[in-house]
Length: 65
Image (cartoon, rainbow, N blue to C red):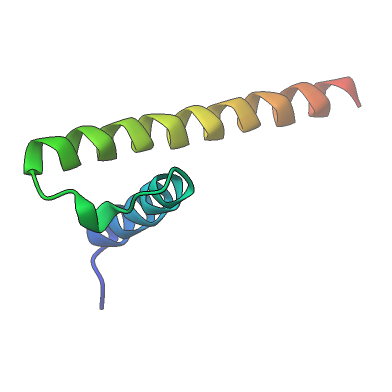
């Protein structure tokens, strides 16, 4: 069974790879751990910001009803 933290890392990597592929690259082309960690942190931040934005929109639309 996959551990929750590893599952979360796999999800982050999948989204990060999709962004890199859209730009003509891929996650497999990056091997320096510092670079990978920085890119993963940036993707986690973007994902967290998207969730927070969605939560605020849902709260706002629920308050208007």
